[in-house]
Image 1: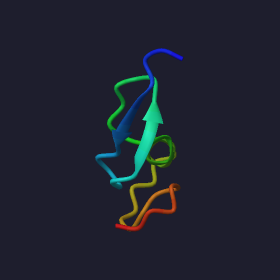
Image 2: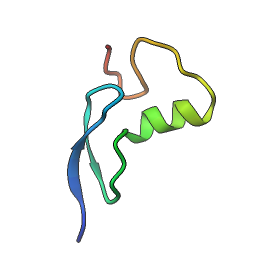
Image 3: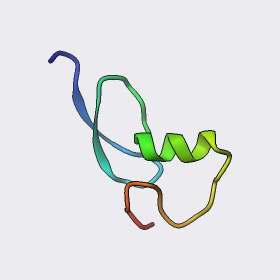
Length: 48
């Protein structure tokens, strides 16, 4: 597996593995794409 790196989500601070240079974890991206920008955590189960 090439190109997988451990990144830290800039939105919720959760560490996640990514093959791209995303700065946000999949859960935060999913929430954003739904138009939900609520404060207080993301789908990672990580609270702000």
